Length: 392
Image (cartoon, rainbow, N blue to C red):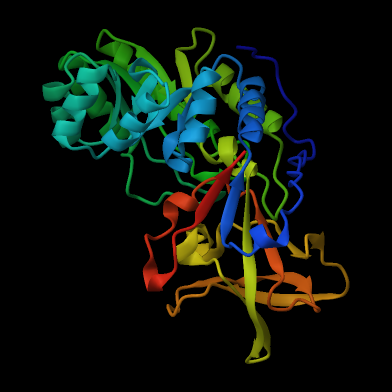
């Protein structure tokens, strides 16, 4: 891995926007909401990630979009896998992926699922507590056990909170226990989803280097450092290019883990599939409430747009009528979904500038929605059907 210095103080390069495909004919448009996913763009993103992170094994975070067409395309391209459940393991195997290329990244697993994963050939597991390590030792003996450390999540659009990971001092004790229990060991972390800071990996890489010294003091070494996910997709606010993120990560690795760098892996999810998707939704109502213009849609929090909760993920939105962009004067609008739940409001603090001519029957296109949309859709809350997916 190159240790050449990179000027990260230079202006951040914009992520290239997705060029959406022409909107389909009106008779197809009526079947909203729908998210259209282009697997060619998924493969384009895989190639871009490989260029940005040379030498890093990419394990696709299956939870981002576990649809069979996506998994099959990535399997054919030789991608590896980050899985979170037995169901995801089985989905990858059905799509042609190999168990030996999987990393079981969920830190809370059924003992029976650990045993199943180990039986079919999974050999990498993540943990962050003594109880989880005990399950690994019993049901996946001799496996690679990666202790997950906490990160601040600062700069992330969708922070991961305190549910996962442990402080480095606790991780050090767990690392020693894992070594004594006969495991090969590693360190894992996640800087938060849709991370806006290309330098967010610096501190956790430094913490991994300190934990490496603990492992070496006990006669072992880190077999792998898992850089996690967090690489962004193109959203409303510009972000740096994947190349800039890769440069920041490589610089941290060279500084703290070089020159004898352990194996590196990463778990891109959103960066792999988000830009491949465009979610199309119909305008149901335009009205004024307390001096604000409200635009109600047939897609909302419960039909694929749950990541708008807290307004942390702000998609790029385009208005169209009869398949053509809707131009003209604009004004701010609050966006809301169709259900009778007051939680089903997408953007209030960050209203969108939409054409004043917008009317029921027009469509809004939400770009970069190939990740965490259909899988987050409810099975039918309030009688609304789950979000439909179409693949090309």
